[in-house]
Length: 374
Image 1 (cartoon, one colour):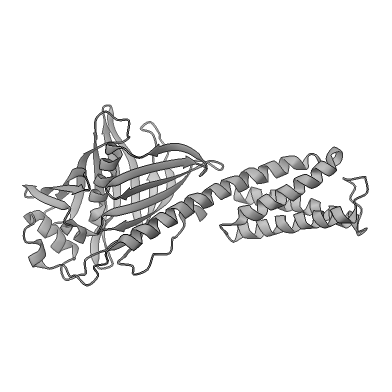
Image 2 (image 1 turned 90 degrees about the vertical axis):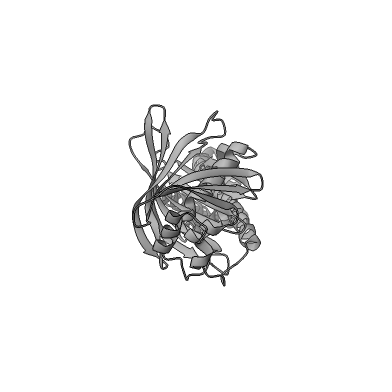
């Protein structure tokens, strides 16, 4: 799609260059039989330059390509109106470029919203990089949780204050879907206060894409999904169900930064030798999950009753299962996981994820990988 757009803009721009050539007698432009004044010729050249700039900005993945694209379309369309009988079909090309530019602008605004939200999260986080996790600090936790923390390698390491990670994802958006959609996502966490911001882009086909953003902040959750970064598909907020679901997601994902299990808002209780229940309560929102481990203390899975959607009458069983454990930054974490919903007619394995990169305790706001430019 991107290559097609570049080719279209290139051809359309070159046609405008010939309008300039005709105005200054450099070359005849047979597509326009009537004379072209030199004043108009300057604008034909300006439109060409703006279209050329647009191509360059698209090629270098600039966030602002849409700006030159819209300006080029405006000038081009004014010229077309003045030579309507012969140049009217250029309106089709302008319409395509304009739609693409509007989508580009919407994507820019969506990304800017995420960046501003993350800046606030980062500025509000409490950096505790000097605190060290000790055996004394974990002695009141269930034995299997202590074993997990020791096995993961957090003892003697600094407490994690913030996390930035990049995920490779495979998604099935409906239970009956057979093929997987490939996606990339970014996520930013703070541990004190507990919060996260997660964004994703999913290519549905060569034309359609869906972007999404989940957020948990101040005990409240938000889930936003947009088609082409422009058309809202879902915007769930101001809901106790969404608040609880995003809190439970934060709770489940502490397996990527195990020292967060010591967070003052999380309480643990033993279930048996290989499992424990964690309950988190923060600013009026409360949720829980059961964590399961193997005999060596490695994380196996988390199980929770969680709302899939704000319209659900009852929560649904939800699991995240570790399929691969690896050492990252000196800590053993699950780097590949499957997520499942257990519906009335069976299990829906809707997500497979892989941690591509993870960073702990950034002292400045991490530079976004920007999944939208992939």
